[in-house]
Image (tube, rainbow, N blue to C red; front, side, top):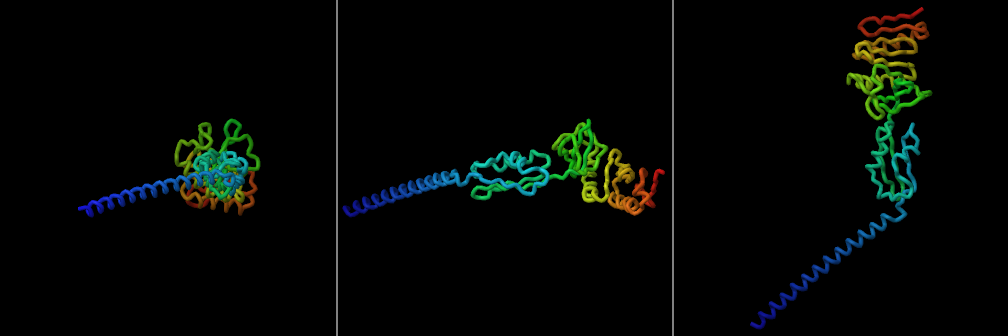
Length: 261
């Protein structure tokens, strides 16, 4: 009987010891986690991780200084406390910027990778110029467009258009046409010298090469029509050098060419 009581006491004592040991181990683990967290926090806040350099790449028209200003990142900021999503949104507030990637380069560098929109067209409104990209987005309104090599755009309600938004249209097909024409004009404007695109009437699309009107009709086979027209203009000197005239490729069959004498 006495042996049984001693065994029970011994078992009970062992159980208490195990519980105490578990509690001790648990407390040690919690203290270790707190210690690691504290040390990590102190390390992350160390000046070693303060921003010393902000690098901007792939910007062509927008200055590095302007992009850094938009980012609201400053030298001396802790690299881990920068809100990257907010920074990206702030940079994209500039309509000329299509995409922005912001990356941390440890220990103290920020890399901003930019993709810009390309200005292709312009429209006139109240002695001001509305600059438009290949997707029909209004990039800015400015007083002067010297040396910008842009194509004039007609057939849109410019007075209702806003910077940063798609140009205002009375027919959504016009925006799709801008995109298609940008692929044709954007890469060829230096050689073709297209000066104006008129989309007022989608069944009577018109381009201008200098003072030569190119009648394209509707948007069907636009690329073939344009190539046909410029083959005539560039191969026939009397057409190329004409002060005024037109080339009509709006229909199937031989184009009609008229030169004003």
